[in-house]
Amino acid sequence: MLKEIEGIIIKEIPYGETSKIIHVYTIDGVISIMCKGAKSLKSPFRATTLKFTYGRFNIYYKENKLSTLSSVDIINPLSKIKNDITLLSYVNYITELTTQVLKQTNDNIYEDYINAILKIESGLDPLILANILEIKYLDDLGVGLNLDSCVSCGSKVNIITIDGDRGGYICSNCYQNELIVDRKTIELLRMYYYVDIKSISKLKISDKVKNEINHFLNTYYDRYTGLYLKSKDFLKKLL
Figure (cartoon, rainbow, N blue to C red):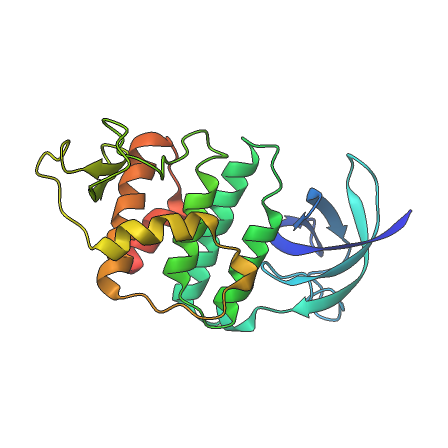
């Protein structure tokens, strides 16, 4: 059955001397596709089946089996990302993270993932977009943040800071010498969680606030998710 799917290539696997298998992440999940002759210099698939190509893939679909590629219509080649090592490192990271999240949830996270990548391609800050995804994915990982009250006493007033080791907001009564963050950092954590990524048109956040949110999320992920991602380590070293 010939079928058109829209998605992004998240993995390439060599197959024989001239072919390869691609994994395309779509709104219906990850579909594996055989690309016959795609590694050949003269193949029309050579340039259209590279990792992080976003397009419409016409395939001979086989449910729960390996489908076969018929043609590709590129929606966005993501050239800016592919030609910038920093942007590419961020996209590698959020792709590896998304792959891990997919193993643990039945929720459809495709729209958030693809919209984050398209926003990075358009020039928006990749750190902020990665952090937004990280916050949104916590529920799917089973370790969602309490964004309404102090993690120690449940108070909804006098929140003065956040702490990754303690797991969230801290009020003045439960404060134990944790680093006091900017008030904007506390407010933006909620915005990151609730924002519709597709609707974002600009991101103007100070470096101080960005770094405080990123530090909190790094600590929280290390302590509560149990995930170890090589792409995250590489990203930390790069930056």
